[in-house]
Image (tube, rainbow, N blue to C red; front, side, top):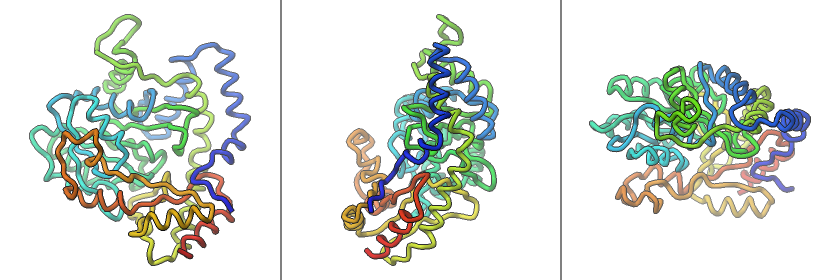
Length: 364
């Protein structure tokens, strides 16, 4: 049996009529940027996130970068980020001229450890950027308390966690702003690159919108040195077609995760840990093992595709060598990078596929 790491086919089959209708609607209207589709999706996604405002943009990296710019984070500032995440989190900080300061994760949840944040705060610290990694919410209450204590902004990186909840509240609604990615592989994915910043602050929302539109608040009037990062009408229409199904599809991911958590019994495998406060959406089902490469090869021989998130930690990437963080300085991030393996996880997995993955992992 072959089990892909991810497949869009089951979802595409279900939503085929809606997606084609969205395309025809935009194509017929002949309006492709900043129109009714974008406006409608922004309103619907803000409501889904429990926020007042949503501003569409070109991708998830821009969503974070524009939020930081709107908050006035820039050259000379520092932003706390987890040491274990996709590099876009740190790049958003770099792109506004600030410096990312890496804080180690909780080895159980893979998310930033609130107990390790304060020791990294300096007079230059301007914001904290918690990442809800793999679709699991961060422990937001202590992070928010720290931010309040030191008068810091919070920008949530929600790129992998559309619809996840923390103590019953949807993530993205805790901080001053939050950034989402709608990359095609996300739980809510466009048919190309797309992103959005959400916030409860109108001033931030207005500034993000202007910054993403060449710094313009109205045509040919530029109040900021902005960027070109707007959610186009076609992607907005596709996302609006998918959004009503997101909660149902997230619940199916949770079912797959429950099967994995209950069925995988191999003592070589460390399964994900879910705190009481979290209801994940399982963008990634990440396990760990000291024999990661052996397991990946073993499963590949059985026709099961896997992935590694992320095999080189950020502080060891060549692009961040100027930070002068030596190997061994962030041991938890390095441990996760060396031992994490992601199992197949997508909407539409069959019971046979799920059981085959479980049996194969147990056989290893």
